[in-house]
View 1 (cartoon, rainbow, N blue to C red):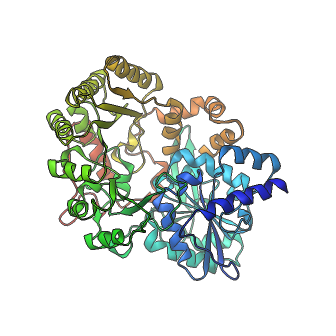
View 2: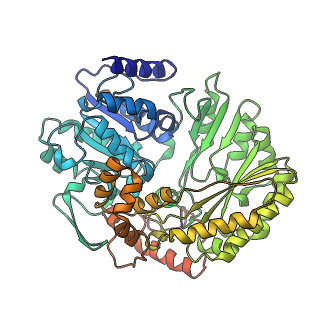
View 3: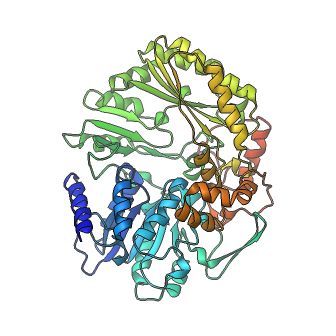
Length: 565
């Protein structure tokens, strides 16, 4: 009793520091527990999570409460005392809700989905649960490939929530009195809903041999896409100082990126690019709470938002403004001057690859001189701190590309006299529904050797910091990104013993899965999902990549090449 009292007090303390919390009586309403499979700090920094919370509570017949992965010390205490996971708003055990919905952005959080189910005293496997709660998952990661979680989740919502979420919740409400099997059968008919128990996968070794959809399920399931982004404006509705963006109003100014970088999952999943009207963004910023001093403009291609400079000019003297991404090839003196006036002290850009050849392969065709000119403009604008993001293990990469990367970093250091440069290097992970979905993940020994080569080449270069990388974390992400439903065995073992032992136990199977090349004819675990982009188009883009050919940016008003428009 002492433990649960202490945990409830902690939740109430968190609530007391929030502004914008929605409190509703549960009586007679559909009760939804919305779970983020990471800490409160991470979850409440996620604009998608906040948006779903608001959308669900806008329904008169629904009450939505939140729950998160407890901090390490609290989690250990709850597991020791067998205290169940409680929602934040009413401190109610999660298993008492009609629906438990997970918002999952990253594959690395899949194990936390299982932790939260276990903590909620809900059987892990869907087949072990005969009644409620109904377990639902959505978000970027399962919209790309739901299969790694498909043995645990009853239904997946695929794609963007704003327009189609109502259809799902209406059907969930209508099926509350049905038994689970009948309810799931009914839910297979809802657009953008994937019910994994209605699909049969046939395997041969580490491959998928065939996939069969059982009536009335459809195949593939088309992802939901918001056609009129001006009808919805995702922005921070719930403020708390206990997050990464505690003093920041986040506003999504656009969705989707026109550039077509072949490695980028978000760039392809959220096509076509859609820009919100400037007046909507301005109105949102105009009504910022008085004690909030920063605005974060977010999206896949924020620096290409047509009205960006106008917004910076209008508001930079009133609030600090940050951008979620910057492209070197859109930087100019005026934009850098405006960013400086908006409170920027560090410029973050992502050349991604060290050589022009490799940047053509990934369809980010920045020339070395173009990048160097960008560094010069950054220095002339008065910035002395620069963050650079690169990947290693890209298709067709050689040691020469790593040496070219080091040369770019050295050149940046020469230009930013007396400045500080942070270099973040991450292993390239092939993602579903992108042109590189067929490509193999590079072997760990090669990745380690190339990282060492970069560090050795830059050793002694003053003012340059190279961030460490976690090969095990990259290996886990590489496996889970493109895994089939047999990943359930790996995840449940990792839950019991930790990732280190699970990776060792399934080493041969995982390595056979991630290090092999796939061909066009092979069924892919995520073939049950239709992102709107033709599979043949993705294959053609992959072929163009290997030929070092680039593809021009997407122009939705005149272009139909990929099939999404």
